[in-house]
Amino acid sequence: MSGLAIGVLRVAGYLTQAGDALSKPFGQTSARWQVLAAAANAPLSVAQIARVLGLSRQAVQRLADLLEADGLARYEDNPAHQRAKLLTLTPAGEKTLADIQAKQAVWANALGARIGEADLLQAQRIVQRVLEVLEAHPVADV
Image 1 (cartoon, rainbow, N blue to C red):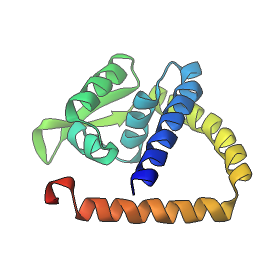
Image 2: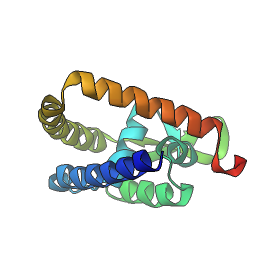
Image 3: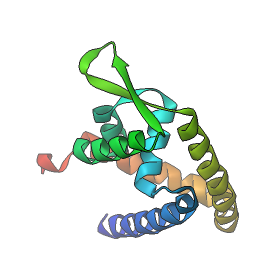
């Protein structure tokens, strides 16, 4: 398990570097891109986005505020919670996200072709299984 964890962390580092490189031409970072993508799926509160991304609420709040200041996202009223506004993308945010995703798709497809579909599907299944076990047995249970 330790070997897998170290490998996954190294992969995560490379993916963050790649994400920064892919999003930089559009004035973004991997972290900002992740928040844009989370908000694009459905209007979510900052706390909900933080849970989805596995980040702290404070970190996502800072990123969401920067995206709002740049005109890429906006806060809307949340019918389920008076104080927790929902983050949604503006048209400029939608375009920025689409531009990054188009560039990322070319990179990911080229990388995926080198790895092979069968290996990628197997790796995806294994990572999903590890996530399920981790979620069911948090470190506090040890």
